[in-house]
Image 1 (cartoon, rainbow, N blue to C red):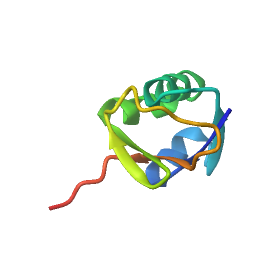
Image 2 (cartoon, rainbow, N blue to C red):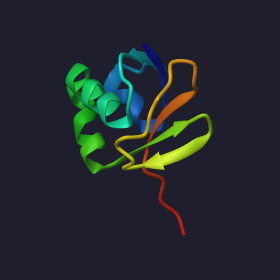
Image 3 (cartoon, one colour):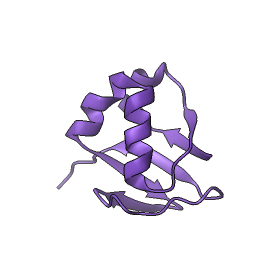
Image 4 (tube, helix red, strand yellow):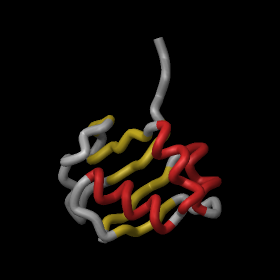
Length: 81
């Protein structure tokens, strides 16, 4: 199981939880399982999310491995300029 911290606006789609646990080994597997378990999260995932693993942010890096002992954070895409 991977403990995932949920950031910002994504929390409303998972009943306000700050963390969830998911059985996943890659970024893609994680978002697929979160979409299935929390259907309200799917529209945001379809718009785009980023995943931080041990402080490094990934965007659309579907095969990024996620180890059980890592810090994993799911967040909306960040925009800026």
